[in-house]
Length: 274
Image (cartoon, rainbow, N blue to C red):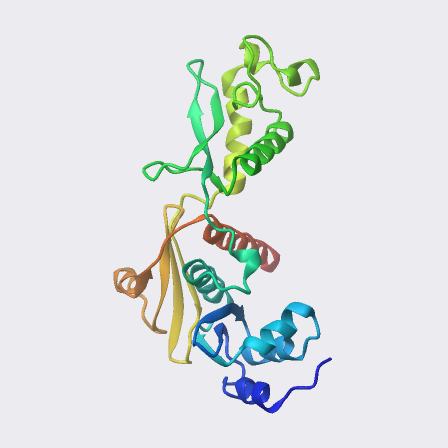
């Protein structure tokens, strides 16, 4: 464990205790070199600045100042962190910098009525089910879910043939490729997959811890699409007024993943409470 020098101690002490939100580490040119989130920013900075790992030591060397945003709750901090990393592309956020999605899996339908999952280049005017940074990443994923849900490689555009697909001979496809399986049965499995990766097509307004004792944080989802987050008086209950407090944000794959995980945890928690 590294001993903190005076400069790093001062940076840590510049952040209020028990603050939940996002933080920025800046170099001497005031360029953002790292963005993170924490339910306790000060404690997280101590971890950064006391670490002896190569990446962290380098981060310590280049950090000249710290800025932060009080966001009140971990969910809003996660959403804000994801947004900021995409906007600023800090040099030390390498794992999160690969964010340009060029290919997507789209749902289409064959003339015979089978729901197909096909890979195409991302189109701005069409909503993809999932997005990927490369064609090979998209193909690998589609092969996996085609196998997992006993779907057809031919229908999903992974195996070109005028007859049965290769998986049919292995009994891993039930014959949709040759119209042997009823399309309604086949489509049921496709729908199970789609439901597993999508936010419920419902409206959600999550009320969360605010930045102060007098307010609450809110996150809005409409028909399964992320609309944004905001803050308002903790006693405000009128839905239309609550929606006016929302800062509108962009929906994307990473945001959906964050929200999907949160909703799953909320559902699990409510079930546990009985």
